Image 1 (cartoon, rainbow, N blue to C red):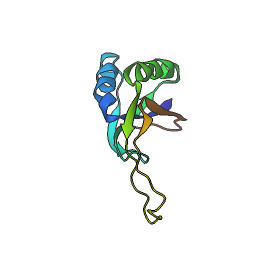
Image 2: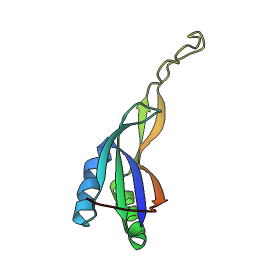
Image 3: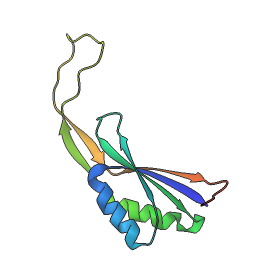
Length: 109
């Protein structure tokens, strides 16, 4: 058994949740916050059999697309403001960050 942990942007979370339900794959959704952009994310925890991992990964890949977004960097805390120039920059957002872990034991009560 495997535990698939997928961190996705909030904009992609509803589509991913719907596609997992269509495939009869259960998941637990957790609200999370990204460290770089301080933007809302959703973390999905999906327990699945080893042979289903590829299908889960395909559903995540189809549901969560990377895109570019223009952001203005936040000012550095505690650093000198003299060298800080807040120019908007293009960053890649969306997509998914996925971890696949072995599950040693599973219980449901």
